[in-house]
Length: 303
Image (tube, rainbow, N blue to C red):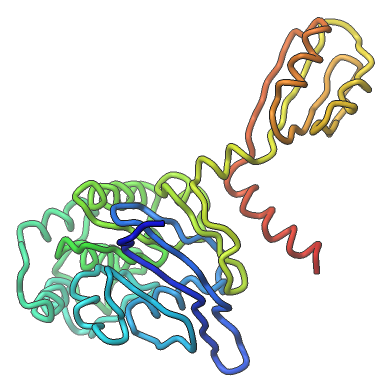
């Protein structure tokens, strides 16, 4: 276990009246990592982030952010954190530049303004318009810049690419990776599976207010089911494949082609196929989205 994690959450509880938003969340994020918090809308992602910043108070459990208790040292936690909320709110009459400067003043005006301008240029953000006249995408760009502009130790990003077009999404992801390379820890929530797959090193899967699993993305994908399509050079009786442990025949196209599901190691399958004339053998792993959906499918089946 990491002795000095960036985020440590134990048995975190939060209720909104009769609604149990967080039901005993346990989570640890090591310093310098990019951690993806994956779950559908309503799973508890935003609630957990707000508790980390003491924007709302949990009903139970303990939190440590950068080694600090957010409820006792919330100002220090927020000063060292870059937070991108799901919906950024500014005084609508302020220009983008004025809004960013207000945030800078709240942080003691320790700001490298040329760096802010570079961030804005990278995502084509105009600093002159009033906030009330911005589109959703441009408001999101403002949120990205204000989260990054003071080079925080920790980034807490709630759906960081929401409302952005694909080119801007990629640029924002590059900016996040660069922040990590410069020493920041990144914790971001998302329901966009491809985004998590591309950016995160480790992921926590949350469903109905509980963390179902925390695991390396590569490990999650490696241990999952695979599929293989086999084409034989001549007709073969394929019943022998179903007798191999971990092998399920999904589709029997004809006597020369079969689609298989593979659970576990492939050694027994390869040895069995070696006794037959094979012309094609293709394997594929399911996407992270398929793996993620399996958590919810399994839960519904249990219910």
